[in-house]
Image (cartoon, rainbow, N blue to C red; front, side, top):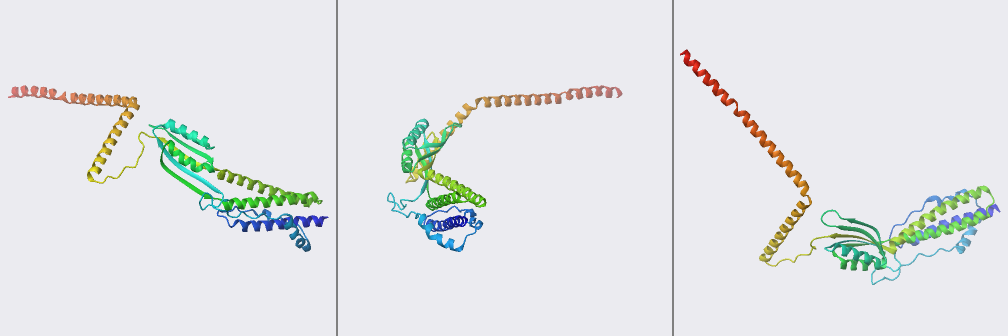
Length: 335
């Protein structure tokens, strides 16, 4: 009975080694990096002693019981592009918007996201300064990714829009194949555990089961993260309130047109600067008043000191004159 348990366990380990090798070769046809497996699944066979005949007799039987699923082959292009139908793609985009009607535009964006079946992963509203701004991260179903980018331009003026595409097919299918291998290995180990009678064998099999379960949890979590990024695209939106929308100026043909255009732009910038200065003074009038009082007090203090010094300098002049007048009569008497 003990030899049969050893033979079963050794066959399971050989199946794991063969499956890992087959999965690595099948996943090489995809286009992303794979996650390396640890060495715990490869070295557990060193804890068992198995006759040579049993190892050779179980290879074909285990292969018939648990055939490996082939890796998905690339399908036809979807949507008229060059992307395979079974490819795992992650779509992300960055979009900058500006508007003169901030409240209406922000509400229109919220309604659009809700209509397309998306949600706000994060949202931050900045109300400091002259104008407001909204920074948010939107998650929308992948099939509505392009619709969101196109219709967001209807709610506000688009100043910048960049979208990115990440093909994670190889990493996804590689981890999917590894997960299938680990689940098959777990089933075989549980079957061996139910037949094991020796305590040493039971401890060894339970240790292998624990390591396999950890690998299954890791691979399952990784696939769930991939599914979340694949099924729901990410769009980073930045909406800011402006006084005047930025537009592309037409290039003047003649020097006169260029001069008039430059003069008009300079005049408008001067008006905008005066308006900003007036608004700044209105916002900080209390601070400016305090500084004005301090400045007037400092000027009055300096003027009083200057007058005092002038008065002190003018006092010795009459005294010296009196001393000279007193000396002159004495000189006359001596004469």
